[in-house]
Image (cartoon, rainbow, N blue to C red; front, top):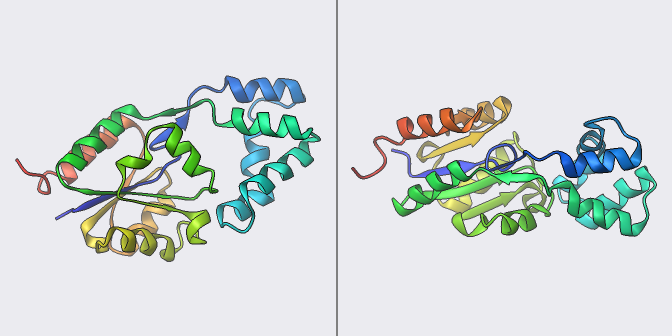
Length: 204
C-alpha cells in the first residue's frame, strides 16, 4: 500500500514554458536559440552547484565570467533565467488532494540551493513533508543515497513510496531500490497513472 509520493521538480512540478526571457538574453548576447540553457546547465560548475560544492552566487558568477557579463548583468540573468518556468497546476491540485487524504509527500531534485527560492516563488514548499535537494544532501540521482535521503526524511520504506521523475534512468534506479516508479511524460497520463496506482491507498 502506497503511503507516500515523491516528485522530481524540473519538468514535473514545473517546466520552462515561456522561453521569451531566455530568448531575449540570447539575442542580446548573440547566441543561437537554446544556447543559453546549454551554457548554464551544461557548464562544468552546474554539477558542482548541484552537489553543494559551490554556492549559488559562485555558480552564477562563473556563468557571468564565461559570457563576459558585468556583475549587474549577472544578477539580472539570474532573475530572468527561471522567469519563464510555469508551475504544473493540474499536478499541484492532485498533490493537494493527496495531502488531504493523508499521504506523505516529498520532493527529490538534482538542483542547486536556488531551488528553495523557486519553490517559495511557486508556492510549493509548504505542500510537502520533506524536500531533498542534491545540493543539501551532497549526492545526485540516480545514486542510491539520494533516494535513501528522502525516504529517511519521510520515515517511509521504499515499498511504501511512489517516485515520479521525467528521466527513465532515475526511475529505474528508484525501482531497483524497491520504490514504485512512474516516468512523467505529460500531465494527463501522469494523473491517470497516479489514480490507478493509488486506487488501493486512498480512502473511498
